[in-house]
Image 1 (cartoon, rainbow over the protein chains, first blue to last red):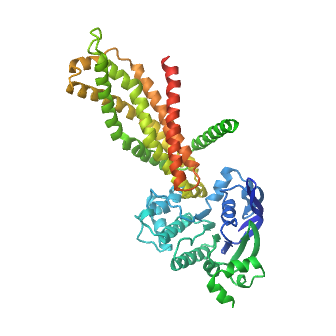
Image 2: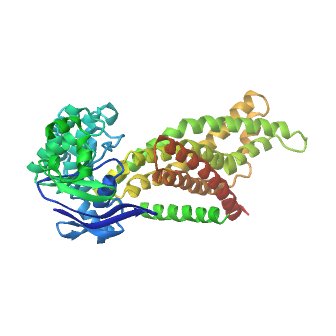
Image 3: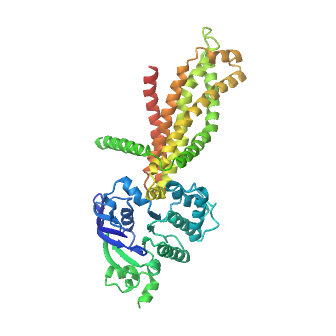
Length: 248
Length: 251
């Protein structure tokens, strides 16, 4: 479980996050939604420790991440996996080298064991025959799937996905959503997804947090969002034509 | 003016803290060793051709210019060999080749690390718990400091041979006179001086561009700007340290 307690973050004069709190439960997918520039990415960067919070705390199973030193954080980071918006695959490495990278760095596995684990992870994301390809030879959807395979290679306890569907067609987006949901449930991990894709909200939103101008504005799930008692949420949701019809 | 000076101190402080962080214990020794060999291949072996071509022509030009200048009957013919050898060993090979490498290798390092920064690959390393500065920067520094002195020695040989070949071909020097000249009053300390310079310049060539690449923000345009800054600042630092080292080691 990940618990975010009253965190605030400013860049100079500009306050980007104001007293945001949320709880992400194990085995469930928590979606953080909001318009571009609302503070979703900064919130995720604070949770994973790429940005320092000005106040408040982040707790990983009651362990206060914000107050840990670099060495202690390293221990928690080995329990994290992250899928970046652009997948962030290492360009100089092949697909299998990318997926094997965390295994080479943090385990004492033999080459055979690593190969076996890489093949298992790539099978999980339906990319069995792409081991030798390089990131430049992959489509956007394939890159995201390799990114997920790399993120789960060390069997993480926490999975973070920043805009997993950006730049993907609806069909591939659906595949990625299903994959995230399946992995979360099967491996019983805590997953936080940043998105502004309403299809993802309806597909995998066990819990939905709406961020508006750096504040947590609304909390619910995919079933309650269409009837939320909140003007900004309804405006955000209402822009999707299909959902407008659904609401009617 | 105050802002300009404080900006310089800001960059010097940030540079030292990055390099200090880079000199940490690597996560896995065998991965680290592999990275060093990859960088030796990339930064060192990949620069061999340009170093050879440049040095041969530098040696040839020094020989012809020396022959052109040494017109007095009091100057012995072997002085051309001495001039070519000392110019190559003391200045041209360690400094000029390092300046060329600052352009080739420096822009390569800054754009590689800068691209990794803007495409979130460095963030990905940090999330995994990998010290990105040790993983990315330290192998480049070690590889450069190890391989650049070899490149400089090769450059010295190539320059002296180039001077001999072109000098004989253009009839500005006799083969015997030149060979006698390059052996005349040979000082081993000059080689030591050149190698010390090569190692210091190699550190600058690898660490300054790495710093500029590591703190790149934005997109492709900013990666290009970082690359340009890396070449300019590492070249200026090479010239500054060339003066300091010469004063310390030869004066």
